[in-house]
Amino acid sequence: MKYPFRLTAAFLTALLLLALTGCGSGSNSFTWFVDTIPANLDPQVASTASDVIACENLYSGLVRKDPDGKIEPALCERWERSADGRTYTFYLKDGLTYTAAKGTAAEYAITAEDFVFAFRRMFRADTNSPYAVEFSALENSAEVLAGQMPESALGVSASGPLTLVFRLNSADENFLSKLTLLGAMPCDEEFFNSTRGTYGLTAKTTLSSGPFYLYNWTSSGLFLRREPSGTLIDSLRLVQNTNNADQSAVELVNGEKCSAALDDTGSTTSLSSISYSDTTWALLFNCSTLFSSTELRQSLAGVAREAAVVPSTGLFAAADGLIPDGLNVDGMNYRSTVGDVSPAAVDVRALYLSARQGMANSDFNKVTLMIPAGSGLTEAAETINGAWQKELSLFFSIEEVDEETFQKRLSEGDYTIALAPISAESGSVYSMLAQFTTAGGNLTGYANALYATQLEASTHATGAARCRLLGECERQLLSDCVAVPLFSQQKRLLVASGIKGLIFDPFGPVLDLTYTTKE
Image (cartoon, rainbow, N blue to C red; front, top):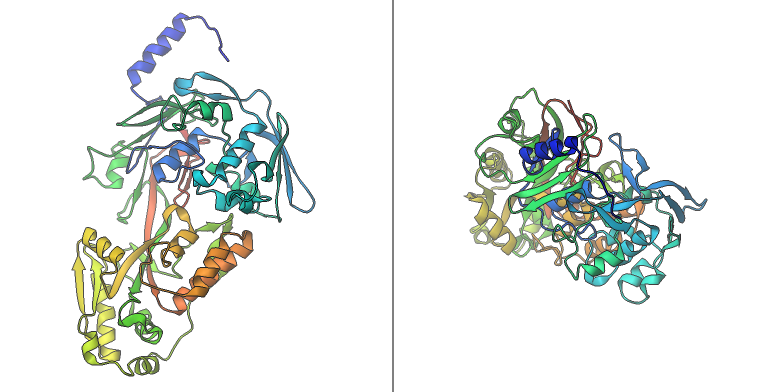
């Protein structure tokens, strides 16, 4: 669609002001530092933090969460849910179109068929979409993904240009919440095919359906804009921190280098903040060494849990489990749903004596406790090591190595015991637990058929059932003492003064500026 207009004096003045503000810098701008410049704006496959944050603001789906977490209509006017919870019907708003780069109106209308195509893409094996697992409740989804049924059999259809119907194999109480995920964003099939494999990879092959449009995309950053409206943020800059890397998050925000920044220092500040933890520090026992003995692991773990003292730096807290608090599964709070997974207290001395049957003292000669230098946990490691000496007469050395060496040796299994950070990448409980399987890299050489089976089964379950299966996996891991969670690393988001209505979730990751204002 093309819209004619006249170049008035006011328009020319506005154009001049726009040029003077620079790429992506509107009157109400928001700057966010990313580790890497966004590289893929295809919502069905976007997975890195910077790509996801860019796509969240570029695209809107049928529904969106407001700052209070309430689901509200976005591209739809309303929806209906069947009594059995297995059919959802959405009625789209009329007259919706995509927006091309620089805010140009695109010639593509947003219709129900765009959602049908998006979901069919999601369940194509060659798309390898990370979002397919979230929509496993869709009718025939497993068969379509496996190539056993055609795409047309997937439980998504359009009964008219503005009417979209989802059919589920079984009720999913969090289906609406899942529709806010990037995989559920619309995709115009004609436009997609015209890009010849470059959809979302360049400015010309990207269309926006959300609050912002793509203004500029260079090696320097990605810049999004929307039409100015009152105090709403109208410009989002995603850039790297190349000139102020030596400054703290507090200094960066106070110096107006960025509008919000992640901080793990715990330094005093008057800035508003949102606290969270996405990392658990745990003792890892390499099961490919003498620690293949479950009893030996359990005895050392029992002593370590009793001896562990939370550092007084304010950067750590006692861990309730391996999975950090705050993570959601299918829109449900994982920890609240699963409950306490801590293993029962054991007689460490009896377990140790049983484990030592047939073992010589020399078997322990090469055992060390490896930790990354600069972690702030050296004293805690020394306390645990001292407790092993006192309670079990085991004498290990503590091996501090630089972070790069630590990660390399951890991934190669070149260690006996390690105090390591286990992070929730993209906020996925499944991915965190999968690190202890062969397919997920197997950090510890752990081999347990039941663990692997239940973890795989969780990918085909939804809601409380999925939480239960994941919870059983976490409980099994902790009971076998393959990983012994000790400390959760405390972090926070610092936000500049005057910023309101920012939707932030470190586990998504989510940084949604749809409702954000700047006084």
